[in-house]
Image (cartoon, helix red, strand yellow):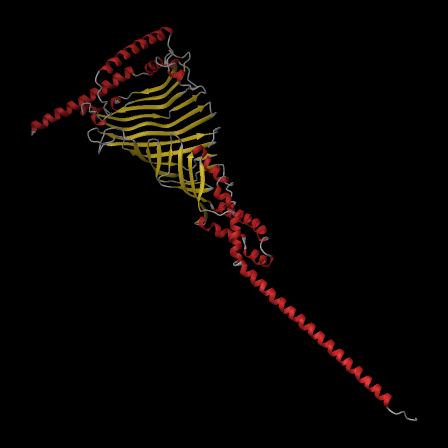
Length: 546
C-alpha cells in the first residue's frame, strides 16, 4: 500500500511539474512572440489597412486563461503603417474594431485526453464596431481595406499561377472523368475523432451600421449579443451530447426607407434557447430548430403594409362604414411579445404564438402562422382587438352613419306607419345588435387574415361578416314595422269602417232633415187646409143684419 502511495505521489508531482513547464513555457513563448507590434505588422502585411492595438495581456497562466487583446482597430492605410505602435498617432476613424478579444482553451482537457477532447472555454469579442457601406455599384467599403494591393509583378505572377492551376485542374478533371465514379459520401459528424466542448463564443455589446446607398437607407445594429454557449458535441454519443445554446440580442433600427411596406422600424430582439445541430441518425447537419424568441417592449414599426391596409382597404369593414383611420402610422409594443417558433428551410412557423400589444390594439396571432425569411411571404391570422377608446370611437361613428342612413330609408315607408317605424329605429340599438358578434370582453374584436408579401400584404377581415349599411337599415325597418301589409290592411279597414259610419251618419242626417222638411210641409199643408176650410165656412154662413 505504501509503495502504491509513493508511486501515486511521484505521478502527482510529475503532473504538477508538467503543468508548471506548460505554464512557464507557454507564457515565455507567447510573451516573446505575441506583441502589439508583431500582431499589427502581421495583419498589415496581409491587408490594405492600418492596425491599432492598445494592449495585449499575457498572464503567467496564459496557456490556461488565454490571451486578451484590448483596443483593436482597423482603419484605412496611411503614413503611420510601419512605425512602432508606441510612435503612431491615435486612429480616429476606424472602420472595424473591438474593445476586447479573449481566446481561452482548456489545455488540461486537451492534454489528458491526448488531443481527443477539444474544449474552447471562451472566444469572446467585446464591443465590436463596424461601419459598412454597400455602394450602389455592388461594392463595399471593406473590400479595399481588407484586400492587400498587389504589385504589377505579383499580379503577373498570380495570373501565371492561375493559368497553370487551370491547366492542372483541366487535366485532373479529364483523368477523374475516365475513372469509375464512386458515390460521393455525405458529411457524417460521427466520423470525427474529437469531442467538442465550448463555453462561450461570439460577441457582446456590438454596434454596427450598414449604409445601403442604392436604397438611401442606413441600418443600425446596437447592443448586439450573439453567443454560442454550453456547446457539447460528442460524435460517439450524439443522443446525449448534441447541444448548442443560443443567445441573440440586438436592437435593429431603420430610420427612413424609400421602399414599400415599411418606412422605419426599431426591433428590440431577444432569443434564448438551444438547438440540437446534428442529426443523431445520419450524422448530418440538422435542418430544423425550435427556439423561443421575442420582440421587447419599445419595438416599433412605421408604415407596415398590414396596418395601413387595415385602415381603409378591407371590404368587410367598408360595407358597414367602419373606418380604422385612427390607427397610428407608427405602432410601438407596450409589452414584450414572446413566441416559440420552429425554423426549417427558411420558414419560421409559430408554435406558441405571441400577442402584439400597442396603444391602439391587441393582435393575437395563431398557431402555425408563418413567415418565409427568404421571400418575405407570410400568413398571419388572429384576433385584432381595438383598445377601449377606439372601440367607443367606432361605436360613435357607426351610430352617426346609421342615423344618416335611416332618414331617407324611412321616407320610403308608407305614411300610415312612418312614425311608428322611425321611432323604433334608434341607431345605438341597431349598432349594438350588429356589433354583438364582434364584441369580446367589451372590445371590438375582428378576425384578421393577412397573406402574401409582407411589403404588400393582402389583408381581410374574415369575422364577423357584416351586412351592407343599406341591407342593415332595410332589415331593421322590416323588424320595426312587422307585417307591414297587415298593418296597412288594418289601417284601411279602420278607414273603411270610419267612412261607413260617416256615410251612415250623413244618410241618417239627410233622412232626418228630409223627414223634418216633410213634417214641416205636412204641417204647413194641414194649416193651409184648415184655413181654407174656415174660409169656406165663413162664406156659406148667413149674413146677419147687424
